[in-house]
Image 1 (cartoon, rainbow, N blue to C red):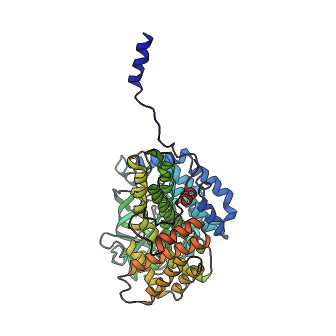
Image 2: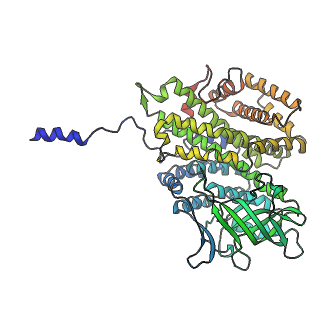
Image 3: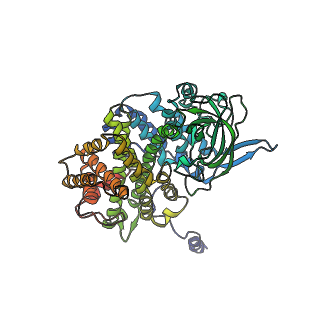
Length: 556
């Protein structure tokens, strides 16, 4: 009888789980990211070390990682009316989304760079945003819009004085009530319409003055907005046609008298990615708003906001790359095939190292622009103007292929929805398309060259700081200079030019400040004649793949 029992037990136990990686959780996103720590120190934010270590532990905790999954598994739901038939225009979110918003706001991701101006504050804020975006990117949309609204609002000091204290408060209040009843508020924006998209001058929404009109004065807005992201924000910067031309307005969800403003949500967008955050189509049926900036100066005004959101697109896409590298290297260091760990196999090393090079180059460029944002120096401002357009184009463009390749490193398990990889993949095109698509960024770079004297010279001077550090870089920068000397068909060639500008700046930064293996590998694989192939994993001979992978991997 005992022998029969022993035999039968094998029918219940078919196998043991082995050759599978441990869950990647409860690790410190800051401590385990050597490139990030070096960038923070290099770009002037060493004073923030303690806070960044604490935030890194929080961001890597099992709790926050799980919140990211829950927020994406439970999409927001629109309620246009309450059960009595009154119009409410309320979007309800899962509690996980609200918790993530609370964490971001309480840690100042929307405000610390405005409330505590000092050297490196944009760098410190970017580091936190970079870590939080790795946990859950969608909720970062209202965070970045709230942050970016400040420069535009300050063009209208009286309105800024009224709204800034609550915008900058570290208090999250998601209730659907007038802003007068809240300690903290969030800000969104509504620019595009069906017929125009990026061509906002084609907008047809009308702004009707309620009095004399002009900056700071009230209007009623009538029209539609085809893409309003985060529609539960407390107020929005909106473009509309005033009598004097396209102008910018601050439109709150509630009128000053406490009544509901007729900003009516028609439906939520059925998005492929960014699903935890709601985006909507909205009708403005006489919605009360005040003009911000000069009449007819709407584009120039709202670009004060858009330029900041574009920088956060750089951070978000760089963060997506970092999380993809972390997931791929973690998996491959613990998964064996054909008698060896994946991370020990030469072809997989080629792929992993290539992904790591792309990630670190994106971070280096992003953090350099963060430091420039801290400066009042005119040349640094010009670098921001050029570098944001170039970085937003290139880093965001490289992310979808990067996400896919990292998913392939993991294999079939990487396609499963209980992995973060499908979310990273769905999220990967968002930053390239939103806030000005790739073509818009390239044309913006050309406009900056034409309108801002010295901008190209400033960019080239930044590259020259690395002169003599790597022969491949030196040759590449010389060829780039020849590209600018030829102005024929420059708009047609704009993507190629911007790509080369991005690679040159990334290479220069890595040569000056980066790890030797990373700098050499980047220049050899991206800037030299040895560069080949159109997919990741085509690194030429001579790249120290093992050193690059070791630097990028986490010890969790």
